[in-house]
Image (tube, rainbow, N blue to C red; front, side):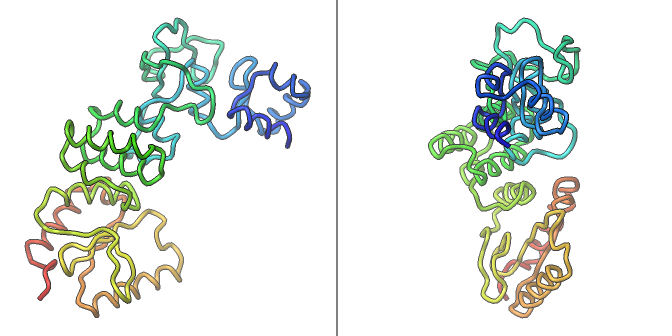
Amino acid sequence: MELITDVIRLGGTARTAELLQLGHGSHALTAAVRSGDLVRIRKGHYGLRDDAEAHHAYRIGGHLAGISALKALGVWVPRGAHPLEIAVRPNTSRLHRPTDAARLLRSGEALVHWDATTVLRSAPFAESAERAIRRVANRVSPAELFAMFESALRLGVIGARRAVALRRDLARTVDHRFANAGRLSGSGAESLVVFWLLGLDAPFVQQARIDGVGHVDVLLGDRQIVEVDGERFHSGTEEFEADRRRQTVASMLGYRTLRVSARMVEREFSLVAAAIAATIDRGDHRAA
């Protein structure tokens, strides 16, 4: 659809005047809204349909910030409810409701930061991942911040030079373990486990390759495998069987496997940590 293509080309939002100049009549705009292809964000402003939180920020008068920005960029964030978080320019005088641009913002409807130098108007209407991570650094645990940073690195939403500077700053101001942050973790849950392991004396390797088994999330010492499974991991019969075959081969080769779920890691980390610590105490990670 040419109308949608033009909105995308304009950055994800477009003013009525811009679309009329491109030859799209008012009837076409109305039809696109009725069909759900476009959303009327506020009077005279249209956007793509799948950016609800970003549209909320747009209606208020700012762009997504902090955890809301990281979510919009696809970065892992801790489980649980998070308020809509936006940044607006310091001189902004009237903020509007996230669902109704004709009414003023009510207390508690959003966490507002009055520090945006400019308000971003192109999808995903979010501040940079680097700025968002720096913003939340004092509001989440070091382990959660580590997982966010590794997720951003893995997705490539922080440029290489900025990533080096941010890694250095976080290692200096938050925890020295940030110096070891990288792109190897396959999930936020795996990053949480890695952050904890970095505080131990036991050596480990991420994404270690074992002949006959393949890559494993973490190889602790010489013989202890730790796998962190996502919520959708191995849901099919073939995948389940392939996974059990890998574990059987690993056992034949003298490896032990501890398998935990992402949900366990994120909600019951003390249990996961105790299980890993027990394998170390028993010496399961050492070759016989």
